[in-house]
Each structure stands twice: as structure tokens, then as C-alpha cells.
Image 1: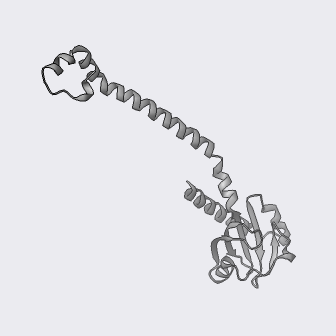
Image 2 (image 1 turned 120 degrees about the horizontal axis):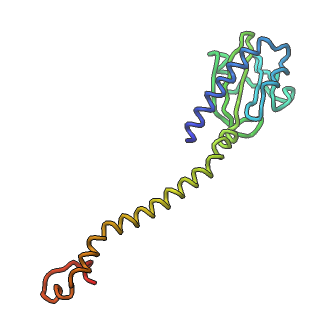
Image 3 (image 1 turned 180 degrees about the vertical axis):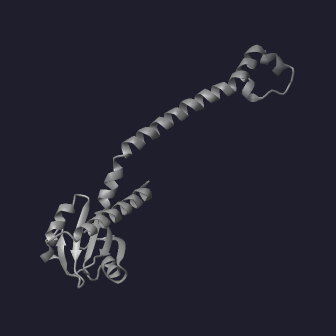
Length: 178
């Protein structure tokens, strides 16, 4: 479930990056990217020298050069990149996707791992309830099946006088002795 949620988050981030990069050509100032940011997505605009022009969570003036970030250097070379690492700025694990824009700048989106886990942590109560129901049903079924399997043996022991059989030196299973 976790792996599938991570894959979905990556698909979601890539799609958001595609949409925002298309809208970027209509934006007059980098600060306008703030309209696309949310509690889940962090947006960073980086120029080709690694200088941060806009960041949706921190003031860009206070951020250091991002040229050494793996997704930034790779995206500058190949056009796009992704990585999963601990953010130096936010001190938390993030999924990153960066894409080179037509003007040479980089648009980078990221999602906190904590946000990803919070997405599927809401399912935990349902999983616990389901697990408990399955366990109770399993216990009930095991008692019922055991009773059904032993029913013929109990009927035989009630009909026969096992003490008489035991006296005749006939070998009897210990389980059948009353």
C-alpha cells in the first residue's frame, strides 16, 4: 500500500509539474507561482546558475544556491529529474521533481513524505477494523468447523458403551474413551 501510494504521489507531482510548467509562460512574475502552491506541494523556481528565484515555503533571498541539489543538476543536463532526499532547508524527507523550462530556468515541485503518509494513515482505522473482523470471523469459523468435524465422533461415543469395549481388550483410541 505504501509503495503504491508513493507511486501515485510521483504521478501526481509529475502531472502538477506539467500543468504548472505550461502555465508558467503566462506568468509575469515568479511570485505568481504562489497561486499554484498548496499545503501538499512546494514550488521552487531556480535559475540556471542555481539561484532560487521563488520558493513557496521560504523567502528566496534566504536560500542558498541549489546547483548542488541532485535533481537540479540532473534537470539542467537532461531536461527533467526526480529525487527523494532530506531537504536541507526544511529538514524533512521530500520527493522532488524538476523540469527545465523554455527560458532555461528550472521549475521544481516537491511533496513531503509526511504528507504522503498522512494521506494513507487515514486508512489505518479501517484496516484495523477489517483485521479485527477477520480475526473474529476466523475464530468463530474454527470453533464451528471443529464442532462439525467432531459431531460424528461424539454421536458414536454416545451410542456405544465404550466401557464394555474397553473391558473386552479391544484397542480403542484414547480420544474416544469417555
